[in-house]
Length: 408
Image 1 (tube, helix red, strand yellow):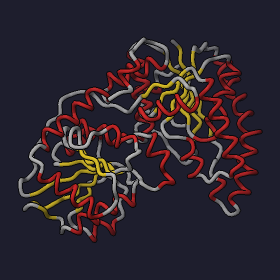
Image 2 (spheres, helix red, strand yellow; image 1 turned 180 degrees about the vertical axis):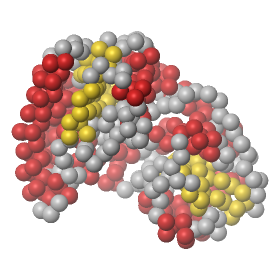
Image 3 (cartoon, one colour; image 1 turned 90 degrees about the horizontal axis):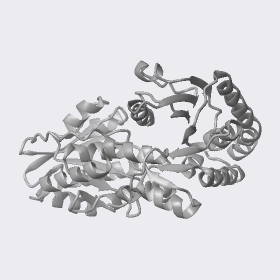
Image 4 (cartoon, rainbow, N blue to C red; image 1 turned 30 degrees about the vertical axis):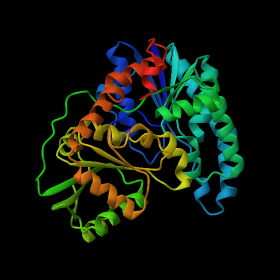
Protein backbone atom coordinates (compact mmCIF):
# COMPACT_ATOMS: atom_id res chain seq x y z
CA UNK A 1 0.00 0.00 0.00
CA UNK A 2 1.27 3.51 -0.86
CA UNK A 3 0.33 5.96 1.91
CA UNK A 4 0.74 9.73 1.91
CA UNK A 5 1.48 11.25 5.32
CA UNK A 6 0.19 14.85 5.30
CA UNK A 7 1.27 16.44 8.56
CA UNK A 8 2.42 19.58 10.35
CA UNK A 9 5.02 17.56 12.26
CA UNK A 10 7.07 14.95 10.35
CA UNK A 11 8.43 11.73 11.86
CA UNK A 12 11.39 12.94 13.93
CA UNK A 13 13.31 12.36 17.16
CA UNK A 14 13.17 15.75 18.89
CA UNK A 15 9.43 16.37 19.34
CA UNK A 16 6.97 14.11 21.17
CA UNK A 17 4.44 14.10 18.33
CA UNK A 18 7.27 13.42 15.87
CA UNK A 19 8.37 10.37 17.85
CA UNK A 20 4.85 8.96 17.57
CA UNK A 21 4.82 9.57 13.81
CA UNK A 22 8.22 7.91 13.54
CA UNK A 23 6.92 4.82 15.34
CA UNK A 24 3.83 4.63 13.12
CA UNK A 25 5.96 4.97 9.98
CA UNK A 26 8.17 2.13 11.21
CA UNK A 27 5.08 -0.05 11.68
CA UNK A 28 4.24 0.51 8.01
CA UNK A 29 7.79 -0.12 6.80
CA UNK A 30 7.91 -3.38 8.79
CA UNK A 31 4.98 -4.72 6.77
CA UNK A 32 6.39 -3.59 3.42
CA UNK A 33 4.16 -0.56 2.86
CA UNK A 34 5.43 2.63 1.21
CA UNK A 35 5.09 6.06 2.79
CA UNK A 36 5.45 9.50 1.25
CA UNK A 37 5.44 12.62 3.40
CA UNK A 38 4.30 16.19 2.85
CA UNK A 39 5.24 18.26 5.87
CA UNK A 40 3.81 21.73 6.52
CA UNK A 41 5.97 22.89 9.42
CA UNK A 42 6.10 26.02 11.56
CA UNK A 43 9.37 27.72 10.50
CA UNK A 44 10.40 28.06 14.16
CA UNK A 45 10.50 24.25 14.54
CA UNK A 46 13.55 22.23 13.50
CA UNK A 47 12.48 18.57 13.32
CA UNK A 48 15.33 16.06 13.28
CA UNK A 49 14.25 13.38 10.80
CA UNK A 50 16.53 10.33 11.09
CA UNK A 51 18.07 8.97 7.89
CA UNK A 52 16.48 5.59 8.65
CA UNK A 53 13.12 7.25 7.99
CA UNK A 54 13.97 9.88 5.39
CA UNK A 55 15.76 7.43 3.08
CA UNK A 56 12.73 5.14 3.06
CA UNK A 57 10.15 7.80 2.21
CA UNK A 58 8.94 7.50 -1.38
CA UNK A 59 8.68 11.29 -1.51
CA UNK A 60 9.42 14.07 0.96
CA UNK A 61 8.18 17.62 0.41
CA UNK A 62 8.28 20.38 3.02
CA UNK A 63 6.43 23.70 3.15
CA UNK A 64 6.37 26.51 5.68
CA UNK A 65 3.22 26.54 7.75
CA UNK A 66 1.25 29.82 7.67
CA UNK A 67 1.07 31.53 11.05
CA UNK A 68 -2.09 30.94 13.08
CA UNK A 69 -1.13 33.14 16.05
CA UNK A 70 -2.48 36.49 14.84
CA UNK A 71 -4.93 36.64 17.73
CA UNK A 72 -2.04 36.92 20.16
CA UNK A 73 -0.96 40.27 18.72
CA UNK A 74 -2.26 43.76 19.46
CA UNK A 75 -5.88 44.14 18.30
CA UNK A 76 -5.96 40.36 18.33
CA UNK A 77 -9.57 39.78 17.30
CA UNK A 78 -9.22 42.12 14.30
CA UNK A 79 -5.86 40.61 13.29
CA UNK A 80 -7.26 37.11 13.62
CA UNK A 81 -10.35 37.93 11.56
CA UNK A 82 -8.32 39.50 8.74
CA UNK A 83 -5.26 37.27 8.50
CA UNK A 84 -6.69 33.90 9.52
CA UNK A 85 -9.55 34.62 7.13
CA UNK A 86 -7.09 35.43 4.35
CA UNK A 87 -5.18 32.21 5.02
CA UNK A 88 -8.37 30.17 5.10
CA UNK A 89 -9.76 31.59 1.86
CA UNK A 90 -6.62 32.38 -0.16
CA UNK A 91 -3.37 30.91 1.22
CA UNK A 92 -4.55 27.38 2.05
CA UNK A 93 -6.45 26.70 -1.22
CA UNK A 94 -3.33 27.87 -3.10
CA UNK A 95 -1.09 25.69 -0.91
CA UNK A 96 -3.32 22.65 -1.43
CA UNK A 97 -3.07 23.15 -5.22
CA UNK A 98 0.73 23.43 -4.98
CA UNK A 99 0.96 20.24 -2.92
CA UNK A 100 -1.31 18.36 -5.33
CA UNK A 101 0.68 19.53 -8.35
CA UNK A 102 3.99 18.47 -6.77
CA UNK A 103 2.61 15.04 -5.93
CA UNK A 104 1.23 14.60 -9.44
CA UNK A 105 4.69 15.41 -10.83
CA UNK A 106 6.18 12.63 -8.68
CA UNK A 107 4.11 10.08 -10.65
CA UNK A 108 3.55 8.11 -7.43
CA UNK A 109 0.06 6.63 -7.16
CA UNK A 110 -1.03 6.90 -3.54
CA UNK A 111 -3.81 4.76 -2.11
CA UNK A 112 -4.70 6.77 0.99
CA UNK A 113 -3.91 10.00 2.84
CA UNK A 114 -2.93 9.67 6.51
CA UNK A 115 -3.34 13.15 7.96
CA UNK A 116 -2.33 14.70 11.27
CA UNK A 117 -4.88 17.30 12.33
CA UNK A 118 -4.04 20.31 14.47
CA UNK A 119 -5.40 23.82 13.98
CA UNK A 120 -6.81 25.68 11.00
CA UNK A 121 -4.05 24.86 8.51
CA UNK A 122 -4.41 21.08 8.57
CA UNK A 123 -8.19 21.10 9.08
CA UNK A 124 -8.66 23.15 5.91
CA UNK A 125 -5.79 21.67 3.89
CA UNK A 126 -6.43 17.94 4.13
CA UNK A 127 -9.90 17.77 2.50
CA UNK A 128 -8.70 20.01 -0.36
CA UNK A 129 -5.63 17.85 -1.10
CA UNK A 130 -7.72 14.68 -0.82
CA UNK A 131 -10.27 16.07 -3.26
CA UNK A 132 -7.57 17.22 -5.71
CA UNK A 133 -5.94 13.79 -5.68
CA UNK A 134 -9.20 11.82 -5.59
CA UNK A 135 -8.17 9.97 -2.41
CA UNK A 136 -9.77 8.94 0.86
CA UNK A 137 -8.15 10.16 4.06
CA UNK A 138 -7.87 9.20 7.71
CA UNK A 139 -7.50 11.92 10.36
CA UNK A 140 -5.15 11.56 13.32
CA UNK A 141 -6.20 13.90 16.16
CA UNK A 142 -3.89 14.25 19.18
CA UNK A 143 -5.44 17.33 20.77
CA UNK A 144 -8.95 18.73 20.26
CA UNK A 145 -8.88 21.75 17.91
CA UNK A 146 -10.75 23.90 20.46
CA UNK A 147 -7.59 23.97 22.56
CA UNK A 148 -5.43 25.08 19.62
CA UNK A 149 -7.90 27.79 18.60
CA UNK A 150 -8.15 29.07 22.18
CA UNK A 151 -4.36 29.08 22.59
CA UNK A 152 -4.00 31.14 19.41
CA UNK A 153 -6.94 33.38 20.35
CA UNK A 154 -8.94 32.98 17.17
CA UNK A 155 -11.75 35.50 16.81
CA UNK A 156 -15.26 34.10 17.25
CA UNK A 157 -16.09 34.10 13.51
CA UNK A 158 -12.88 32.31 12.50
CA UNK A 159 -13.29 29.93 15.44
CA UNK A 160 -16.76 28.97 14.25
CA UNK A 161 -15.65 28.52 10.62
CA UNK A 162 -12.76 26.23 11.63
CA UNK A 163 -14.96 24.11 13.88
CA UNK A 164 -17.50 23.77 11.07
CA UNK A 165 -14.66 22.61 8.81
CA UNK A 166 -13.51 20.17 11.51
CA UNK A 167 -16.99 18.68 11.73
CA UNK A 168 -17.04 18.15 7.94
CA UNK A 169 -13.52 16.73 7.98
CA UNK A 170 -14.37 14.06 10.55
CA UNK A 171 -17.70 13.23 8.94
CA UNK A 172 -16.00 12.63 5.59
CA UNK A 173 -12.89 10.88 6.94
CA UNK A 174 -12.56 7.17 6.42
CA UNK A 175 -11.53 6.96 10.09
CA UNK A 176 -10.44 9.17 12.98
CA UNK A 177 -7.35 8.05 14.90
CA UNK A 178 -8.32 9.35 18.34
CA UNK A 179 -5.88 10.29 21.12
CA UNK A 180 -7.87 8.53 23.85
CA UNK A 181 -10.79 6.22 24.45
CA UNK A 182 -12.78 9.26 25.62
CA UNK A 183 -12.09 11.09 22.36
CA UNK A 184 -13.09 8.07 20.27
CA UNK A 185 -16.42 7.78 22.08
CA UNK A 186 -17.19 11.50 22.08
CA UNK A 187 -16.31 12.10 18.42
CA UNK A 188 -18.35 9.08 17.39
CA UNK A 189 -21.38 10.51 19.22
CA UNK A 190 -20.81 14.19 18.36
CA UNK A 191 -19.64 13.97 14.74
CA UNK A 192 -20.89 10.52 13.64
CA UNK A 193 -17.25 9.73 12.91
CA UNK A 194 -15.68 6.27 12.68
CA UNK A 195 -13.14 6.43 15.52
CA UNK A 196 -10.40 4.16 16.83
CA UNK A 197 -8.13 5.13 19.75
CA UNK A 198 -4.45 5.04 18.72
CA UNK A 199 -2.50 5.91 21.87
CA UNK A 200 1.29 6.49 22.18
CA UNK A 201 2.94 3.19 23.10
CA UNK A 202 6.19 1.47 24.09
CA UNK A 203 7.76 -1.98 23.73
CA UNK A 204 6.24 -4.57 26.05
CA UNK A 205 9.38 -5.76 27.85
CA UNK A 206 9.15 -6.40 31.59
CA UNK A 207 9.89 -3.60 34.06
CA UNK A 208 13.06 -3.79 36.13
CA UNK A 209 12.01 -2.28 39.44
CA UNK A 210 14.82 -1.09 41.71
CA UNK A 211 14.11 -0.26 45.35
CA UNK A 212 15.00 3.21 46.54
CA UNK A 213 16.44 3.95 49.99
CA UNK A 214 13.95 2.75 52.64
CA UNK A 215 14.42 6.03 54.51
CA UNK A 216 13.34 8.00 51.44
CA UNK A 217 10.21 8.13 49.29
CA UNK A 218 11.01 9.06 45.70
CA UNK A 219 8.40 10.61 43.37
CA UNK A 220 9.12 10.89 39.63
CA UNK A 221 7.86 13.45 37.12
CA UNK A 222 8.84 13.60 33.42
CA UNK A 223 8.10 15.93 30.51
CA UNK A 224 7.12 19.56 30.20
CA UNK A 225 5.16 21.04 33.10
CA UNK A 226 1.98 22.11 31.30
CA UNK A 227 -0.14 21.76 34.45
CA UNK A 228 1.70 24.48 36.35
CA UNK A 229 -1.04 25.27 38.89
CA UNK A 230 -1.53 21.61 39.72
CA UNK A 231 2.22 21.03 39.99
CA UNK A 232 2.49 24.04 42.29
CA UNK A 233 -0.35 22.82 44.52
CA UNK A 234 1.36 19.42 44.73
CA UNK A 235 4.54 21.14 45.95
CA UNK A 236 2.43 23.12 48.45
CA UNK A 237 1.06 19.83 49.79
CA UNK A 238 4.59 18.47 50.22
CA UNK A 239 5.68 21.75 51.87
CA UNK A 240 2.82 21.47 54.36
CA UNK A 241 4.18 18.16 55.70
CA UNK A 242 7.81 19.29 55.56
CA UNK A 243 8.64 16.79 52.82
CA UNK A 244 8.57 14.02 55.39
CA UNK A 245 6.02 11.43 56.39
CA UNK A 246 6.06 8.16 58.28
CA UNK A 247 9.80 8.49 58.85
CA UNK A 248 10.54 8.91 55.15
CA UNK A 249 12.16 11.92 53.51
CA UNK A 250 10.25 12.74 50.30
CA UNK A 251 12.24 13.52 47.14
CA UNK A 252 10.61 14.83 43.95
CA UNK A 253 12.73 13.81 40.93
CA UNK A 254 11.97 15.96 37.87
CA UNK A 255 13.13 14.78 34.43
CA UNK A 256 12.66 17.88 32.31
CA UNK A 257 14.47 20.95 30.99
CA UNK A 258 11.39 23.05 31.64
CA UNK A 259 11.38 23.85 35.33
CA UNK A 260 11.87 27.30 36.86
CA UNK A 261 15.34 27.44 38.49
CA UNK A 262 13.80 29.47 41.36
CA UNK A 263 11.64 26.48 42.26
CA UNK A 264 14.76 24.33 42.59
CA UNK A 265 16.46 26.96 44.77
CA UNK A 266 13.43 27.22 47.07
CA UNK A 267 12.89 23.45 47.35
CA UNK A 268 16.09 21.42 47.90
CA UNK A 269 14.05 18.20 47.91
CA UNK A 270 13.28 18.70 44.21
CA UNK A 271 16.05 17.15 42.12
CA UNK A 272 16.22 17.99 38.41
CA UNK A 273 18.00 15.70 35.94
CA UNK A 274 17.00 17.61 32.83
CA UNK A 275 15.81 15.83 29.71
CA UNK A 276 17.14 12.28 29.31
CA UNK A 277 16.61 9.68 26.54
CA UNK A 278 13.61 7.34 26.76
CA UNK A 279 15.50 4.19 27.81
CA UNK A 280 17.39 6.01 30.55
CA UNK A 281 14.16 7.66 31.68
CA UNK A 282 12.45 4.28 32.07
CA UNK A 283 15.40 3.02 34.11
CA UNK A 284 15.24 6.07 36.36
CA UNK A 285 11.47 5.84 36.76
CA UNK A 286 11.81 2.21 37.84
CA UNK A 287 13.76 3.47 40.88
CA UNK A 288 10.83 5.61 42.05
CA UNK A 289 8.23 4.79 44.67
CA UNK A 290 5.54 6.81 42.86
CA UNK A 291 5.12 8.62 39.53
CA UNK A 292 3.15 11.87 39.39
CA UNK A 293 0.84 12.72 36.45
CA UNK A 294 -1.09 16.02 36.70
CA UNK A 295 -3.72 17.39 34.29
CA UNK A 296 -5.21 20.88 34.36
CA UNK A 297 -8.35 21.51 36.43
CA UNK A 298 -9.06 24.94 34.91
CA UNK A 299 -12.39 24.83 33.02
CA UNK A 300 -10.64 26.68 30.19
CA UNK A 301 -8.73 23.44 29.52
CA UNK A 302 -11.64 21.06 30.12
CA UNK A 303 -11.83 19.80 26.55
CA UNK A 304 -8.14 18.86 26.40
CA UNK A 305 -8.25 17.19 29.84
CA UNK A 306 -11.33 15.26 28.78
CA UNK A 307 -10.14 14.10 25.36
CA UNK A 308 -6.33 14.01 25.24
CA UNK A 309 -3.94 11.47 26.72
CA UNK A 310 -0.45 12.33 28.08
CA UNK A 311 2.35 10.17 26.69
CA UNK A 312 4.12 10.32 30.07
CA UNK A 313 1.42 8.05 31.52
CA UNK A 314 2.50 5.30 29.12
CA UNK A 315 6.08 5.56 30.42
CA UNK A 316 4.91 5.61 34.05
CA UNK A 317 2.76 2.49 33.70
CA UNK A 318 5.48 0.61 31.83
CA UNK A 319 7.91 1.26 34.71
CA UNK A 320 5.78 -0.89 37.02
CA UNK A 321 5.82 1.90 39.60
CA UNK A 322 2.41 3.08 40.89
CA UNK A 323 1.17 6.32 39.39
CA UNK A 324 -0.72 9.18 41.04
CA UNK A 325 -3.13 10.80 38.58
CA UNK A 326 -3.86 14.34 39.76
CA UNK A 327 -6.66 15.46 37.46
CA UNK A 328 -10.33 16.44 37.32
CA UNK A 329 -12.87 13.65 37.50
CA UNK A 330 -13.95 14.17 33.87
CA UNK A 331 -10.40 13.78 32.48
CA UNK A 332 -9.41 10.90 30.22
CA UNK A 333 -6.74 9.72 32.66
CA UNK A 334 -9.04 9.75 35.72
CA UNK A 335 -11.33 7.31 33.95
CA UNK A 336 -8.40 5.24 32.64
CA UNK A 337 -6.81 4.65 36.07
CA UNK A 338 -8.87 2.93 38.76
CA UNK A 339 -8.09 4.45 42.16
CA UNK A 340 -6.50 1.95 44.53
CA UNK A 341 -6.49 -0.79 41.87
CA UNK A 342 -4.32 0.18 38.86
CA UNK A 343 -2.97 3.38 40.43
CA UNK A 344 -4.07 6.29 42.58
CA UNK A 345 -6.36 9.19 41.65
CA UNK A 346 -6.76 12.59 43.29
CA UNK A 347 -9.53 14.76 41.82
CA UNK A 348 -8.80 17.86 43.90
CA UNK A 349 -6.27 20.67 44.14
CA UNK A 350 -7.10 21.24 47.81
CA UNK A 351 -3.84 20.94 49.75
CA UNK A 352 -5.38 19.04 52.67
CA UNK A 353 -7.01 16.54 50.30
CA UNK A 354 -3.73 15.98 48.48
CA UNK A 355 -1.86 15.53 51.76
CA UNK A 356 -4.32 12.85 52.86
CA UNK A 357 -3.92 11.07 49.52
CA UNK A 358 -0.11 11.19 49.81
CA UNK A 359 -0.26 9.78 53.35
CA UNK A 360 -2.46 6.92 52.12
CA UNK A 361 -0.05 6.15 49.28
CA UNK A 362 3.12 6.28 51.38
CA UNK A 363 1.56 4.04 54.05
CA UNK A 364 -0.04 1.61 51.59
CA UNK A 365 1.45 -1.87 52.05
CA UNK A 366 -0.24 -2.83 48.76
CA UNK A 367 1.55 -0.14 46.75
CA UNK A 368 3.90 -2.48 44.86
CA UNK A 369 1.02 -4.71 43.78
CA UNK A 370 -0.89 -1.65 42.55
CA UNK A 371 2.16 -0.68 40.50
CA UNK A 372 2.17 -4.10 38.86
CA UNK A 373 -1.58 -3.84 38.18
CA UNK A 374 -0.78 -0.56 36.40
CA UNK A 375 1.80 -2.46 34.36
CA UNK A 376 -0.90 -4.96 33.39
CA UNK A 377 -3.00 -2.00 32.20
CA UNK A 378 -0.03 -0.93 30.08
CA UNK A 379 0.23 -4.44 28.60
CA UNK A 380 -3.45 -4.43 27.67
CA UNK A 381 -3.72 -0.99 26.07
CA UNK A 382 -0.37 0.76 25.59
CA UNK A 383 2.12 -1.60 23.97
CA UNK A 384 3.49 -1.19 20.45
CA UNK A 385 1.62 -4.32 19.40
CA UNK A 386 -1.70 -2.85 20.56
CA UNK A 387 -0.96 0.48 18.90
CA UNK A 388 0.07 -1.26 15.67
CA UNK A 389 -3.18 -3.25 15.51
CA UNK A 390 -5.27 -0.14 16.18
CA UNK A 391 -3.29 1.84 13.59
CA UNK A 392 -3.65 -0.87 10.93
CA UNK A 393 -7.37 -1.10 11.61
CA UNK A 394 -7.76 2.68 11.23
CA UNK A 395 -6.09 2.42 7.80
CA UNK A 396 -8.37 -0.45 6.83
CA UNK A 397 -5.58 -3.01 6.85
CA UNK A 398 -6.94 -5.53 9.34
CA UNK A 399 -10.11 -6.55 11.12
CA UNK A 400 -9.12 -6.02 14.75
CA UNK A 401 -12.02 -6.13 17.22
CA UNK A 402 -12.67 -2.45 18.01
CA UNK A 403 -14.16 -3.22 21.41
CA UNK A 404 -10.79 -4.58 22.60
CA UNK A 405 -9.42 -1.05 22.35
CA UNK A 406 -12.24 1.02 23.80
CA UNK A 407 -13.11 -0.64 27.10
CA UNK A 408 -10.96 -1.03 30.21
